[in-house]
Every structure is written in structure tokens, then in C-alpha cells.
Length: 330
Image (cartoon, rainbow, N blue to C red; front, side):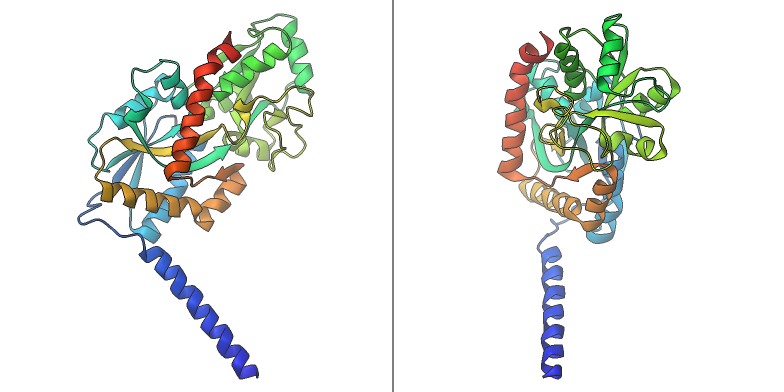
């Protein structure tokens, strides 16, 4: 009987190994692709959540799928410079970018002169939660402390954001609206959340509307305090920080996981075989245990959405952004 049990276990393990191998083998490489490194543009400064996400995909893509990617940080225009560089590139699969939800905002609100169908969205990477953070030595212990101080001199207290016209900016404006003044805070755009965090710690900003994933190191080191998360659920890496509803404010969607997503994009016109391959390897890498663990530790969620689901997600964001100019900023 014992021998039979061992035999069954061995067969089971063998089948698992074969299944795993077959799962990887189903990703068929196109002929002669890739023949060189694939450039992935990160449209923000090094050190932020976008940058770190792509860099954590690098070794997985290399070791498991023999795909070499290089990261190129192209800053400027609240992410517009890098994204425009990507979609203007040759559609050969060798130039990609990681685009966030603010890029959809830029299209919906006419900030950039392109249409949604001029971008090919390949695969989701992460989804994040936004939070209001202040320096550890800040006198403000609650979000109400912060807002009451702002009410004394509206428009002078600063909240840093990695860009304007994005979820970070919207959360700052909506927080002011909760106190009767959409211009209660001066939202300061900087090139990437890493710079926002540096300014907060250095005393150059009163606070910041940033992703938990962008502030995880500073949270763990005790350099900042999280006054509130702009989501319905508390953040694992800041369990003591109350949610927006726990603070007594109505929930708005701009700070939650479902809104703060990003995806690997490409210029429109990829060869169908190359496109299918890129979607498959990036989705596999995002699902990989090592990347999921990275996301867990970084306060993000691995989000390997593809195909019609990703298309619907982008379309929903677009519809939200079409109306949010009136809802948020007016």
C-alpha cells in the first residue's frame, strides 16, 4: 500500500511538472523575434512605482522567457513625452511603454491630440491605492488636522502629485471640495512620485497624494505618515491609516485600485504573431510568483488583465474621464 501511495505521489508530481512545462511551452516565439533587446519606456523618473514594476519584470522575462528588456526613463509633460515617443515609434515590437490611467485622462480631456484607438494596450501590470501622506515630523496627525490648517489660508498648503489631471490630482481637489473649496490646496506637479516623496521628506511640500506603492520605502523607514487612503479598504502596508469613508468622506473612485491601473502599451500596427507573443510573455511574467510577491511587498496588486477585459477597463476609464472635468475640477 505504501508503495502504491508513493507511486501515486510521484506520478502526480511528474504530471504537475509536465503541466508547468507545457504551460511555458504554449508561448510560441515568432520567427526571428525578438532578435534584440526590447525597450520599455517609463514616462517618469527612476525610483517610482512605474519604474520599479518594470525593473522587477526584467529578470523574470529574461530568465524564464529569454526576453531582454531595457528600461528607458523619459520624463516630461506629466508622462506625455515618453508615451508619445512610444506610440510614434515603429510598430515592430521593440519599443513599448508602461502607461497609467492619467494617459487615458489626457486623451479624454484633449490634453494630447490623439485618440484612444491610436494606442495598443497589451497587458495590465499593476493596480494601486492612493493615499494622503505627510512627513513624519509634520504637525498633522489626522486628515482633518491637515484640512483645518488649510482652511486658515486657502490655496497655500501644497499637495504634491506626479502629474496634473490624474487620479492623484483629483483626490486633492475632491478633498478640498469636501471642505467646500475645490481650490483649498495648491497641487504641485512633479516628474514622478519619487520626487514628490523627496520633497515631502525635505519639507518642500506639506503633503502628497501618492500611491502606497510609491511610498512603501518611506512608510517602512518611518519617514512619512499616512493620514488616509483614498480607497474603501485599508492598505496592508499602512494598516493604521483610515480609509476615506472611515474619515467621514464620501467615496470617490479616483483613489482606488479599480481606477489606478497601468498597462504595457505599443504603437498600433504590430504584426499579429508578435503582438500575441508580447501579450503572452508579459501576462505570464505579471502572474509569476516572484512578481506577485514584489507587488505584495510594494503595496500594489499584480493585474495581468488582457484582451477584451483590458479593452473594457480602458473604455470605462475613458468614460469616467469624459465627465470628471465637470465632476472634479468645476
